[in-house]
Image (tube, rainbow, N blue to C red; front, side, top):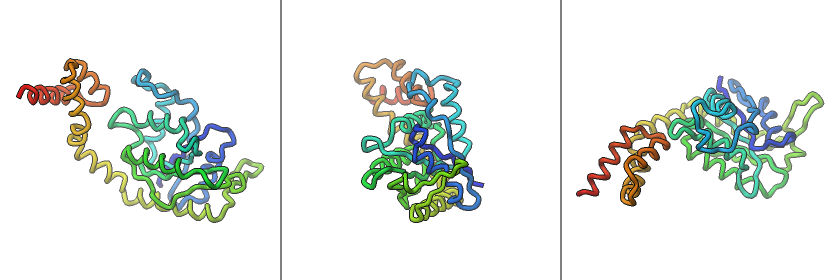
Length: 251
């Protein structure tokens, strides 16, 4: 059984994106379960001062829920030509701690429900790019933008939501089947292994230039170390980079 968590980028009670997520069950392939996350509105604005151990309860719940599943489906509206702040905020929290975030090595499908026929693709592109940059495998096709969402979603008196747009339903079936194929092939885990086996090279390329510049600009080794620790590096790694930068400067 592939366990999928569905996250809506809208907090509105009657959100079309949330309703779309609730309509996915009958469209999912055999062996895939989809649960809709409720609680994004409780997550505080990302603030490094709140990065405590343990994390604030709403953040801890979000991270634990994402960590426990195999993949995600994100449905989001487009706000001002991009993704909504509430979704970006959740992704920021899920990307931390650096290098050990819950939103990494997951298989992810992204879709958009919108009122019109000219919006949605910019938000879709931004969300795919952002989630992919965190080390996840994002389903590249088909792209799903549910236009005219009010007429495409039907809610029964018992609260059951059904997607009545047959064309959109067909695309989503394919998208979820591709998501299942990614999980079955363990492509997301292969990506994680490839990155982790080269983690030392990646981290050095990312942070060593900062160490060199900071020391050259007069920062103390202690200050540089604290900055590196806040970015998820170990004290031993920081000491090695600082010694290397100091030796290169002396030469």
